[in-house]
Image 1: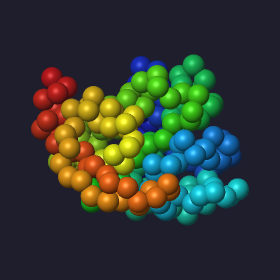
Image 2: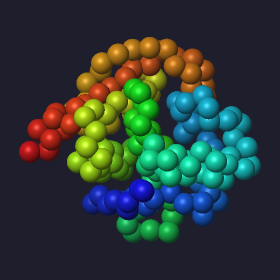
Image 3: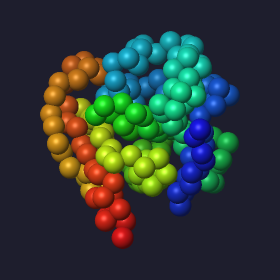
Length: 180
């Protein structure tokens, strides 16, 4: 199961079906989805959030293949501002998105710190890999701040098309050494 997590400014709450309405209102913006995996439908359908949560995310959590959280400011705990997840998928262990009003404030970096720590120190996985489109500079900065390194490049399909992509990696040993 997905436990709640906290950072200095955020509550990371396990994803629930009841979150669909807020996510549906916040998520479908080109600036948010363009560098997400191509399986995200675009234009985003009116039932996109409920379908994703009910038919994809929660079943993966139940199978022990994924962990999904909504992001909420501690100052406004009822309002979802984004989402982050971890998954047991080769070369694709972490993904996230953040609503436009909350970008460029270091919030996703905080969320990534919490879930990466969970990945290594609770789930005890040996390595975390995060793919990203080369054009996604904001996501790259988060990986760099976390001490990740570029380990591979490949083409991947995104909502906005097929692009050269990077796979960033950090090992549990590197993560723990960085935290000391």
